[in-house]
Amino acid sequence: MTAIHEIVKNHQQYFLAGASKPLESRIHALKSLQKSLAVHEKQILDALKLDLNKSAFEAYETELGLVREELASTIRHLPKWSRKKRVKTPLMHFLSKSMLYPEPYGTVLIMSPWNYPFQLTMMPLIGAIAAGNCCVLKPSEYAFHTSEMIQKIVEEAFSPELVSVIRGGRAANQSLLEERFDYIFFTGSPAVGHLVMESASRNLTPITLELGGKSPCIVDQTADISLAARRIIWGKCLNAGQTCIAPDYLFVHSDVKEKLIEEMKKTISEFYGVHPELNPDYPKIINEKHFNRLLNLMNDGHCLYGGLFNSKTRQISPTLIDGISAASPIMQEEIFGPLLPILTFENINEVFTFVSSRPKPLALYLFSKNSNDIERTIQTLSFGGGCINDTITHIANAHLPFGGVGESGMGQYHGKRSFDTFTHQKAVLNKSCLVDIPLRYPPFKNRLSLLRKIM
View (cartoon, rainbow, N blue to C red):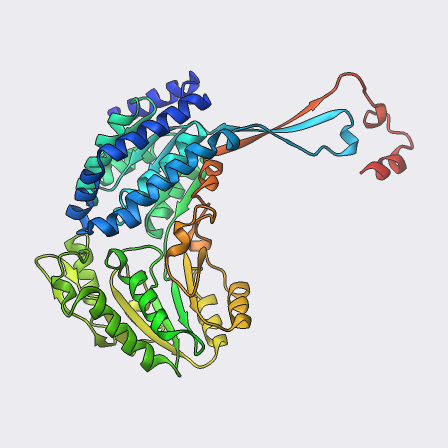
């Protein structure tokens, strides 16, 4: 698309002119965004209600509130983050000083998904602007109303040369990936992540991939079962399970399985009523395609609880499924919905074998009071991040970087790590002209023994 090429070219020229780099300009841009979010709070929450049926509380808790916290923290800490930093210099470089100069990459592309359409667009944008980049945003058209709000906010808060929004479907995505960017930040499915990485590789463009996968939740026989039930159901049903770090499947010790199932049933009823699929505050599935996919997965195994749905509103009640094996269809893909398959174990080593033989998950959750098994789980299994005796909440701590490992992604962000992600640390050694030690110059003669003493 010629229009996309021209937009990217304008960003590149703006960046080369140095307009996005001054600290004052970056802080001004972030404060402008901060002001716009405050003005349009209700419209943002309304858009999330229309797209995903999120209640105002859930929308603020998981989207707008996190973005506002990130903005305030970034504005506060940016002067410190953006300073050049002196590092140690080895003796062999006598009379030198070594510095790190943080510099922006240039023009970056941020591609965001539909499940948390506001948060997962704005969080990386904050880091990119803080670092001094120009940005092209590509939100998902599946979340049409939120994408519309994002475009309105961006056009109000920023100059078009600093940040722009490209709307559209696959054709727009493809056109964007044909352009040459200085950095690409993608959040979405592993399948699309492969295509984005392939496109980036043509220009050796650095990239962050925030993907997903099947995140396990483990409950052993020492866990507080009532508390575990509440926190698992909350994490699984947030956004109707359309969360990349939702507990995807449950591994429970046989001694506490029945008790946990009963507590989870009770919790679902307490949270969402007897008919969650009719609850006006319970989120809906994003579109018919995903709704039908989830209905097909519900046919797998034995439904212990739930299994109800509302075709008019695309709401599916939280559903507990037993009789699952590793070969079951529901265990072959990320569920991305309010279905929770349940597996049983007798020994924690069974869980270690099962999880480690599969692609590395984005998140892992363990409910236990056994400090030895907690430490063994953390040390034995590889995963992006997670919680002990909770779900999801690690994402809300700006001091913890968020990101995947292996097939669940590469690169991290949140807090200072967002600034670091969009920043190149330029390394400079500044050598004095007062002294020039001849040791390094040829002819080398018999200087090896002396060299060994200083290296």
